[in-house]
Length: 80
Image (cartoon, rainbow, N blue to C red; front, side, top):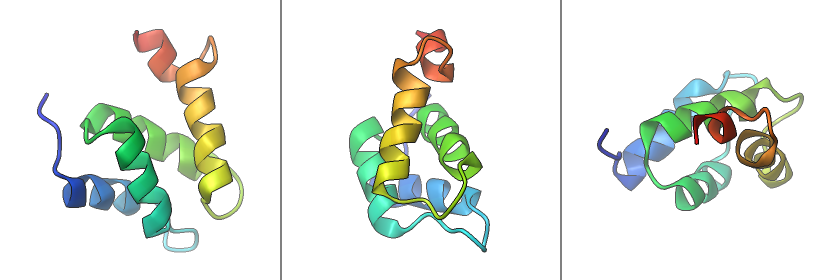
């Protein structure tokens, strides 16, 4: 699956969030920088990030990434 460009990857993350609790650009940029522009990774991270209570922020991005990648039941951990 081809990767998205930087701007398209940020847009993918931000379009997943609700209007009441949008993913800020700085959070989306850090996520794209961390995971590259792979659509599956970004979609899973966006889902994990938007399911958390409160407005997405850097701390929430770190927690979502940990849950997704490093926990034994994380969706990307299971993928690999």
